[in-house]
Structure formats: structure tokens, C-alpha cells
Amino acid sequence: MDEHSLLASFESTIGRHERIEPRDWMPEGYRKTVVRQVAQHAHSEIIGMQPEGQWIGRAPSLRRKAILLAKVQDEAGHGLYLYSACETLGVSRAELTEMLIEGRQKYSSIFNYPALSYADVGTIGWLVDGAAICNQVPLCRTSYGPYGRSMIRICKEESFHQRQGFELLATMMRGTDEQRAMVQESVDRFWWPALMMFGPPDDDSPNTAQSMAWGIKRNTNDDLRQRMVDMTVPQAAVLGVTLPDPDLKWNEERQSYDFGAPDWDEFKAVISGNGPCNTQRIAHRRRAHEDGAWVREAALAFARRSNEESHE
Ligand code: 3HC
Image (cartoon, rainbow, N blue to C red):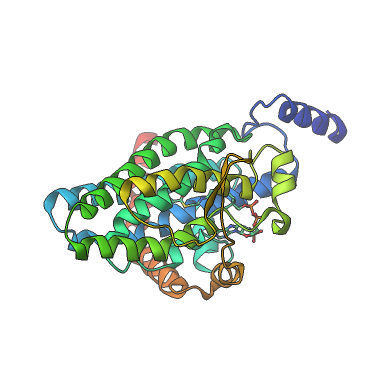
């Protein structure tokens, strides 16, 4: 088939809302956009282990430690599914890792904020995994097959994470005044960065229109941000915390909440490498990668030897 017919066939698959699979022909721009988004997503899962991981050794009980360990391990698993999805497009996990630690690919802005108190473990589960669910449930229907299929399991686990965060916060809210204050302080710090996770406003989002036309994204950034606010306000009321936005109020006409604007200058600074923890996060990831070199070498040597033995 010539390029014109290949493009027509690709567009008709997208138009029927069917999946593009690894061996299908696709425009180079589509391949690059999926790699960019999925790699950024994978890196977010891996870097996202750091803020909560710091609390594993300091969790207040064996039960809380076991829950947090399992959650952080789940994030590693999500990163691995997503790197595998990227590999189906001809780019290896090793290359992607290099791009991350050299600052050539991004990861979610939210993980450049520190987890300062134990309440942050609950807030990250509730708000950060909550935002991840709003963003990722529609991605189960993304047009690239391996990405959409990996999202199904990831979303189930993220929902569980969100509930464990809510349960942790609810427990603290039933505790002492100090614990309630700790939860409120944590929510005050995380609310706006959580809303920034959805990306810039639609009129300042260079990739949304093309990504939606290709079915890679199913909703715009602002649309998903609104869903997050509408989902979270009633949950905040159940918890008994205040969301730090004086403009937050129910709009009867729109049947949705109105809310204020995040500080987009802060967002731009964070995604350009100047957030509170960018340097520390990448340095930690680089160190872990270098410390793991001997494991990769040993695994490759073992694979080579097993291969030679099976050919003897
Ligand atoms: N953090 C870092 N960079 C961001 C960002 C954020 N929150 N939001 C947008 N950006 C970047 C984009 O990557 C793009 O940069 P680039 O062109 O250099 O790659 C630029 O800002 C402009 O933004 P656009 O809106 O045009 O970009 P996209 O169309 O790619 O939309 C997105 C951004 C909504 C984040 C989209 O990529 C997406 O839906 N990604 C999949 C979800 C994802 O990555 N989630 C990570 C969240 S955390 C997580 O899953 C871990 C869990 O444990 C909680």
C-alpha cells in the first residue's frame, strides 16, 4: 500500500474508535506523541515512588507500613507496564531511562513537591491518586492498544490507592486536634499542585487538539480538572477538611463547581526543572539507576549463558 492509502486506513481505524496496534502503520507524529505521553506517564510512576517511599521506614504501625510498601510497589509495577507499552513502539526502557535522567523527558509536576508530614501519605493517596484516576480512566479507551490495556489494571490499583489515602485521612480526622491540623495543612499544600497535574489550561495546551484528534487523549485538560473538583468537594466535606480556594462554589446553572485558577507561573517553573524537589528527584533516580548496573549486567550475562547452553 502507498503512504496515502496507509494514512487513510489509519484514519479510518481512529474514526471507528478502534485500536492502533504495534504492527499497524502509523504516522511518525502519532508514534512520537504516544511515546512522549506514555514515557512521561511511566517516569511519573517511577519518580512518584520517592515522596511516599521516604515514609515507609517511619510509618506509625506495622499495618500502615505494609499498606504503604504495597502501594509504592504497585507504582513500580505501573511504571514497568508503561515502559513495556513504549517498547512496542521501538524505544527501549534503557533509552527512556537515559532521557529521564538527562532531563530530556518530563514526569508529572506533582512529584517535585515534598512529602513533609505523615498526613501527606494520605493526601497523596486521596488527591494525587484521585487526580490520576480522573485522568486515566478515560485513557483505558485511548487509541493505542498496549497503552489502553495497561491503563485498565493501573486504574483498578489507583482506585484502591485513592481509597487507602482517604481511609488514612479519615482515621487521622477522628484523632486528636494535632492530627486534624496536620491533615488540613497537608491538604492546603497539595490541593493546587494536584489540580496542576491535569496540565495547562486548554487554551495554552499545545498538544491537546492533535492528541484528541488521534484519540490518544479522550478529554481536554480543563474538562478533567473540572471532574476532579466535582468529585473531590463532597469527599472533602465527608472528611471535614476545607479546600483552600475562596472561589470554590456550586454553580447551579452548570451543575458543577466554580473554582479559582492555579498559579500557572508556579506550574511552568516546576515543569522547567525549578520546583522544590526537581534536582533531588533526578539525582536519586540517577543514583538508583547506577547502583542497579550490576544487576542488569548479571541478568544479561545469565541470559547470554542460558542461551548458549540451550544451543549446545
Ligand atoms: N507535569 C509535567 N509536565 C506536564 C504536566 C504535568 N502535570 N502537564 C503538562 N505537562 C507538559 C506536557 O508534557 C507538555 O510538555 P512536552 O510537550 O514538552 O512534552 C507541556 O506540558 C504542554 O502540555 P499539554 O497539555 O500540551 O500536554 P499533553 O497533551 O501531553 O497533556 C497530560 C498533559 C494531561 C499530563 C497528558 O500527557 C496525560 O494525560 N498523560 C497521561 C497521564 C500521566 O502522565 N499521569 C502522570 C500522573 S501521576 C501518576 O500516574 C502516578 C500515580 O501514582 C499517581
